[in-house]
Image (cartoon, rainbow, N blue to C red; front, side, top):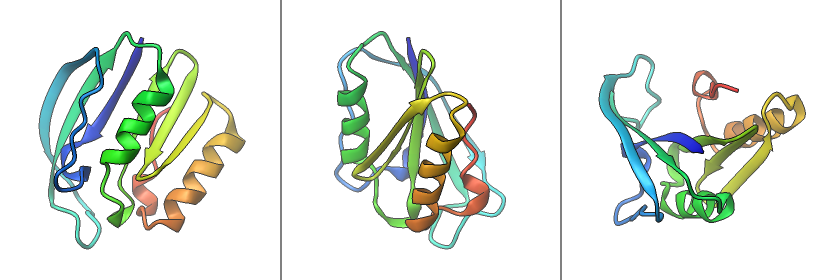
Amino acid sequence: MITGYVIGESFRAGAVFEPRGLRLRKVSRVGIDGAADGQPAVWTLVEWESDGEDIGALADALADALEPELGWYADFTAGDERVVVFARKVFRYRRGDEAGRAEAVAYGRSVGTPEHQLDWEE
């Protein structure tokens, strides 16, 4: 099973994210302390899951839908794999792989993701 979340405000205007087999688990709104300049102070968290097996297609769909400004990203797990998706860039690594995580974190820094937001769980 694939499980993940995406911040609703991270989608670029006009984007559509509708992979086959995607199921909504939960939608919530949360206030964000320390939102970066240009980021809204309230985020919509969309938690989802899928039984699909095409991890690459799912990641590519997210990469195409995310806003490239402000370093937005989404992440998900598929078995023991962690997938971190930025606009037009996907990182896949085994959970617990420090080098794989470090590469994704370094990329996030390079595109302006605030340090305290590079905190996805393994």
